[in-house]
Amino acid sequence: MNRISGGASPRPWLAQGGDAISWLIGREQAARFLDQTYERQPLVVTHEDRRRFSDLLSFKAIDQLNAGADLREGQLMLVDASRDLQPSAYVTETGAIDRGAVVSQFRQGATIVLNQLHQGDATLAAFCRAMEAVFSCHVQTNIYLTPPNAQGFRTHYDNHDVFVLQVEGEKAWRFYNTPVDLAYRGENFSHDEHPVGEVTHEFVLKAGDVAYLPRGLMHDARTSGDEPSLHITCGLIVKTWADLVLEAVSEVALTSPEFRRGLPPGYARQDFDRGAAKVYFRTLMKTLSDHARLEGAMDLLADQFIRSRDADVSGALALAPRPITPDQAWRARDDTPWRLAEDGEGLALIAPGGDIAFPMGDRAAIELAMGGQTFRVGDLKAEDPERMIARLSDYGLIQRA
Image: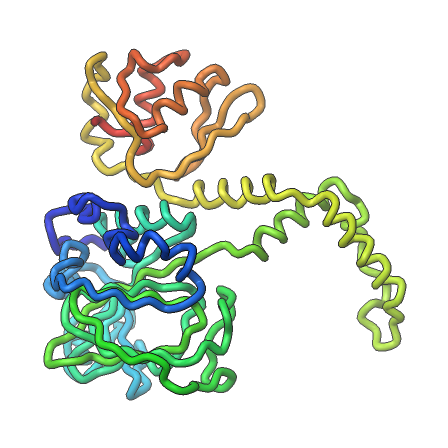
């Protein structure tokens, strides 16, 4: 799903001399966000710059997508808090989006939702990678275009933290209670189970403003003013301490057979006596306390995260035919996660898209190439410096400086 970006700069936060989080919420807020705000309380930031996010997206770009992209069911959704809007109202029998129906439903008050638009847009993808460099988690974008005097969703909470970037128009928001503190990823909101409390905060997001919502916070939003509202929801899909502990338990179980024993026969019976099981369980917890280690479990989760990222190979094809000359300067791409690990008799550079194998003696050269500083082929004390540069460039890890 390709589109024409709203502006000229693919990384507007760099054009303004900052990282993505500082550009998003301001340097002053960013300096204390992770320690004082993240996962603790909501945040609303007013920038007084209505074009702050215009390089990421625009109403015109959404119009072009609806007019020309091959959109399928699931890529575009229509929602309306005032009625039950089924996909059959805007999806054809072949699964294609009915473009005219989208316009008609939008005219009637439906919100257009573009799911995971970063997967087909270079600028949004770069923004997600920059945010992933801050949070070390999967970052996604969903787009919401709401007509005037309309509301897409009823009051609810999300099971992942979100930043709301108001791109065009205005939206009136209301925050309520937090019935589930730091909801699990699968702990979805239910109108029957989670009553809506009193409004705790009301505000209007204008173009260029940002709101941060921790997961579990009840909220709703409605277009304010006479113009449509366009906003980007940037979602953070995190790994939790529970995930880390589960990996640590699995690691201990590899060397502790007592964890691999089957549960006692008959444990599911009503008359089963759990006395001995409680003693055995306390023994397991003691073993876990003595032998569980953070390093192995965190390394595993870090490697899983890095490998799950897509390689940023933009521009690599165009550069591939050009020779690697002694005077050409190179540097690592911004926001690219990586780790080095020993793999048998060699090294594995763990990177987006998968591992790249190198000889054991190339460690210092790899660390130099990926360290962020500018270098040339003669600076790399490697078995085959030109081949190293070619492989790192092919997989989008370095670029010509």
